[in-house]
Structure formats: structure tokens, C-alpha cells
Image (cartoon, rainbow, N blue to C red; front, side, top):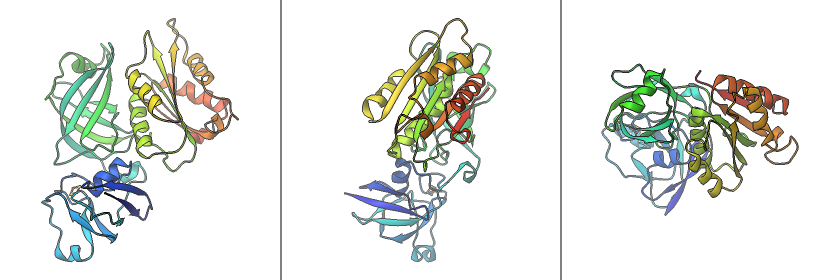
Length: 337
Ligand code: FES
């Protein structure tokens, strides 16, 4: 049994499965309603039911007054639609990065996953009392004991408010990277501060999506693609990854799985030449993997482009995209350099 939930005033609609809280269903569908803890203790998901009925599926500590209940207010993290009745809920959604306040949450490392000889994926689980609200593609500052903090991209999807992922590249001159590869173990405590950054999806755009990533620039792209998949956007998605050095890029199989599972998803890898090929030359070869400007849906003049990686790379791609006919306003770039 499932219900359709509509958020007011945005008009965004999504399906809630039986027993699933309204908040869980909204996040799974790629929406970003206001919330803070996801477990009934902070009150930030408090919202008014305009149409339909809900039933409690989880105990909550936060006190909703009788007057608020009579006015239709409830906690979206603690209720589900009753039966298969559809629901209209008045809830403020984040429509951009400025709608989300800075937060500081505690977390623990659940896994340090080797992703290649030179890359690791660190999995963090935040404490249930306060989860991190962010938009796909954003960054956060991660802090462990005994090592300077690091501002890095979140590779996880905001649809899972509890589990975060970051990608780390081996770098002998970077104390944080050295700590991750040599010392970090499961169970280590961390604090995560954020979110920051404006490299987020324009999910109202009807255009195709082009993602170009180099090195750990794949982290925000992974988050953006998972978000686009959850939104069930019916647009072509094209991913190009640039790898420096021999072998496939890290998390190559993850990307291949998307290409195998999703209609309209194309995945290409561009290998940078070992002899110090310039960023401009690499960007030119990236563009050569793409369709011509007027080749129908997903053509270069009909895409929104998202580019992440080293600064020289993102600058070169921006220039090449402009020369290929992608308007400047439709190119978003992000770099941590
Ligand atoms: S009470 Fe905190 S998110 Fe619902």
C-alpha cells in the first residue's frame, strides 16, 4: 500500500510506501524538507497537514501542543500517511543552499574502504540526535582528533541523512590524507561541520545533464547523480571521468553499474597521457567524447554541465564547453584547490 504526498507550496509530489514516514519518503524522493534529527526530538520537521490523515509510526520526545494538533501540525519524521489516503503537507523545502543553516554534527567512522591504490572512501555515520542536512554536491569540514580538519566534498546522497561518505586521495604532503590512509580505523570519532558550497543541481531544469569529473571531483558528482536518480529526472545523463595514471578511475564499477541499469545514461573514461598532458589538451579530448552541438536530446547546446576536480582542469573544461556552445550560465564548476 502506498500514498502520494504533495508538498505545499512547492507542489512537489512523491510516493510514500507503507510504514514509511513522510520525511523518509521525501528524502528518498530527492526532496529537502526542513528537518534536524529525523528521530522526533528537535521539532524542526513540524509541518501542517492540509489534506489527508496521518498515523504515528514512531514515538517522539518533542512536544506538539494540543492546539497545534487541532490545527493539523505534526512531526513529519514520526508519522506516515494513514492507509492509502493521499496527503497534502505544508512544509518549507530548501530551494537553494542559502535555505540550509550551518550545522555541526558528531559522527563515527563505520568503514575506511580502499577504492584504488590511491583513493579511499570514508563512511561516516552521524549520531541520531542531530543529522546533517545538506544538498547534493555540497561540502563539509571533517575533523578527527590529532590531525588538521579538512574541507571536502560529501559524496553521499542527502536522501540518507545518517550515512555520509567522503573520498580521499593519497597525498604525502597532506596530513589529513596521510592520517586517513595510515591511521584511520572503524569507530573513530569525527565532527562534521557544514554544509558549504554552491555546486548543486538545478533540478527544475528540463535539459540533459553532463557531469565531468577528475580525481576526487568525482565525489560531488557521485552525490549529484544519486540525487538525479532519486528525482527520477527523465533527461539524458552523461558522465565523463578523467583519470591520471594507469588503470580505470576509482569506483569505476559503480559508474558502470549506473550505465547498465539506467536508460539514457552514458559513461566514458578519458585517460590523460602520462607525459604531463596539459589541462587544455585533456579538456579538448573530453569534449571530443561528446555529441555535436545539434545532435538532438542531450546535445551540447541542450545540457547543464557540472565539472569538478583540480582548478586547472575545471578552468580548461569551462573554456572548452563555452567554445562548444554551452552557455556560461549552464556550466557549474567546483574545485577544492
Ligand atoms: S523532530 Fe527532528 S526532524 Fe522531526
